[in-house]
Picture 1 (cartoon, rainbow, N blue to C red):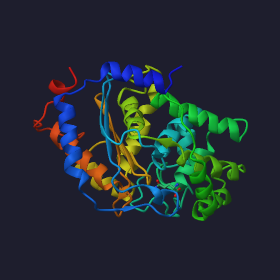
Picture 2: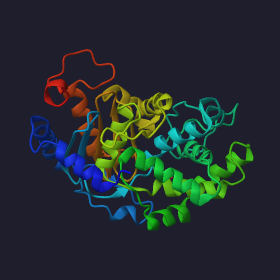
Picture 3: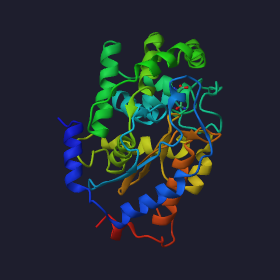
Picture 4: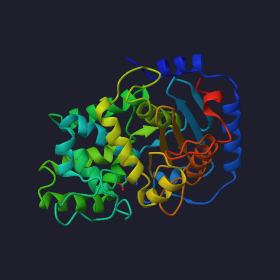
Length: 336
Ligand code: GLN
């Protein structure tokens, strides 16, 4: 079974000490370290403890190379990034049709915590807004709360190659103050869209948001998706191949809150962000990007992380619909 040491040792034997790509990432890091726009999330006191200077960039390729600069060991809570991966697990548990009866896949253009359901079907709009994520967490199978959480953590380990802990103070704060999430959950219960075990599901949702990750984990999450669901370093399958497409298409249309259209236009990579300051972005069949910087823009996305992804996408022609020759050739630099 892979663990953090396995991942570390396999990585250090593969990753080059220096390379043009690593130099490029270092330059990006320097360029945006001085960007101090944005605000640290402070809706619970634990998140406000983050330091504005924290900044890590990690790129993991589908052939198992890892490139990292800055604070890539700093742990933070995964928050909304978990939503994409829990959606994948719900699909494995129930299949596409059933999950789609419970949660739509339509972007909202509304904030992540908006209390809106589809008027005709009563479904939440998509698995990336809180209401949809709670309905999705409700679908995670397990005979009790412990087993459901264990399955969720195992799923994460499949992607990242290491064990993850819950940040208990964050979990308790989310649970203690998440009245809006509870209201949405009960509204969905009223419409029969979630099961009676909704209090247990709310705990599971608050726990999934409180999973601790670092920028390297975020790169591995997206590199695994980019690699068709198999972790490129441990070679373990994290999600059934047939559902990779579902997860990344919803990431593309809904992953960056109500900035998803702008992101698709500018960056053109399926991605998901969280209020902890993380972004994970998928360049299919190529690589995964993980960034961490807790300063958030008005839409709740990491200011430096967005900039890094914009530059990477432009310079390496990673935009899904790119047709022009990029200034840097990824195949020459890192993917041979
Ligand atoms: N825990 C947060 C919530 O449910 C998730 C927020 C986020 O990352 N957007 O409100």
